[in-house]
Length: 323
Image 1 (cartoon, rainbow, N blue to C red):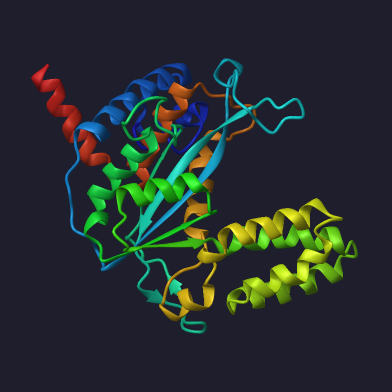
Image 2: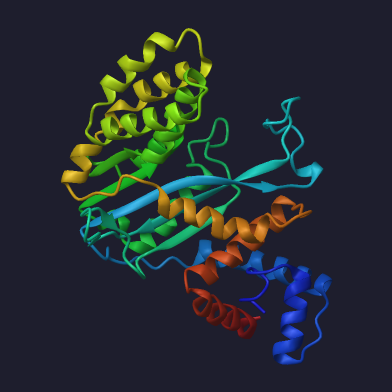
């Protein structure tokens, strides 16, 4: 059951368990059981942290977020993207730790290593509580996963993200020491450029051609040239202004030619794929979650994705004996 409910709806899990094991478990009972088990996983994640050594001298950390559809009570007072400023979702923050020592035979680009990836995903805060010196919930969760993966002992840490300041601040506080290389995900950079050229050139063929030129410039490290080419249009199109501002704010993290020369990844495909994997369970049509329920399911699913379910079940059995 622990491997079933994180991967499919409760109704589908009920049918699957009945067909596979001949056990009749209603969807409502599976929902209650999953919530209780997921909350135990969260406790286990905080109590059982075994520090490991890094798999490679260079490790990667990719961070992003994915929206989780929520019940009304759980988005009260939350700013969102609706016309009235309200929200229908909460952001689950995903951190993926992995290695990428393999190389593409044609391009030479770094490839994620199979079996070298773990992830952690929850709806939690990236900011410390007002007036508190304690780290944020996300920082504490990331630190625990970093200890499990030996990230603190890695000689070289590459952090790939959308450039959000809270990600940089958190990683500087946790890892710092000059060993962190921050990379602005090139796909986010190209999204901004795509919006800009579509605003300037409404004809479909022209934006595609212009975007290819911008991509070539970015990969060659000519970010300043791209900004100069776009700036004359920034006063007329808000998309162009947003792109130029985004590039100026992140230009120190857009040295893609140097990153490639050093054998680094420059894209966030690993974490984007992770967002989809977690989202497949939580974004089913008509689904609405409470924060408690969503986090319990995310915690349970992370155990399955990371192949760490046996460790938790052993701990769970020991807790039952002690009780």
